Length: 393
Ligand code: PLP
Image (cartoon, rainbow, N blue to C red; front, side):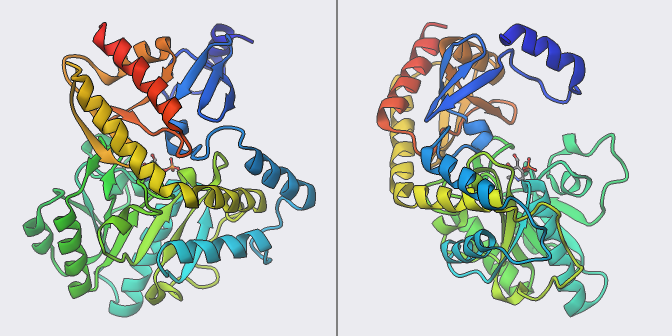
């Protein structure tokens, strides 16, 4: 089937919850994608930060097929080797955290962190201390609870009643944080707000907030769903700031395209959730865990290159002096271009027509999340398309 009939069939039968571009992708290899009409694209989106090792990586295919041939799923009532090895690896790369829970998505991972924070606080302090502070502009998911956690009004309509117990403060405003009362159990942040518009938090703010959390025994929870697993040039976004969170969530890039996520906690939360307190049928699925182990192996030596490529892309875009681009921001391969005089969505349509697949974020950001394995040649090809498309607009 070609693009048009595929669009027609999907629009007839899939609920209209996404504003889709009129393209159906059918094939990917490395940092290239092909649509159902056979047109080729450079991938600057990685399926929203998911296909971190590009498409159809041979080692990833091998790991998945080998695991599928031996065992795909047994439930969490039993131990498995890929799950055990992956949890050990995640504790190591997080800088010494103590335990992992596996889920299937980012929102679920954040739900787990929220449950952990409330249980820790109620075990230690009793009731009345369940409020979680999140930041204005944040995004943590689309379940009823994570919608409530999102610090953006647009997510707080239609679906009442939302889960109570969330308050929002301005990023960077330490006074607002210090003014919070004794009903608080945790602060949940993204070190770079992704969906909110690729907004990096200030380093001093992150460090001061971490100190305040320690003083008040609020848990510092970092949502690493978008920033984690190498996206910013370190394994996790918080590792740029010399702070140690009490818990972090991860998903997106972890399994290179398979649905997987989870959260990792520090030693003091190791025993907070016991048998029966939390669970997931699919979480820790053997195929996903085997894929994740290979993703981590592939990414480990590439982290410096992710940071360098990010700096290179920013430099090149700044040199282009494009009238539509007021600012380039972000870190590693999580980059946002602030668009003026046009909309990011309409620019994206033009880029797609020219063979570059990119994303938007917030209201005025064109977002680039290329595969982390991308090389200079593919970066340059993508940037040339950006330049030719915008310079001639
Ligand atoms: N947290 C952050 C920072 C995200 O960027 C996202 C998704 O974009 C989520 C949570 C939700 O993840 P999922 O869509 O896998 O539930």
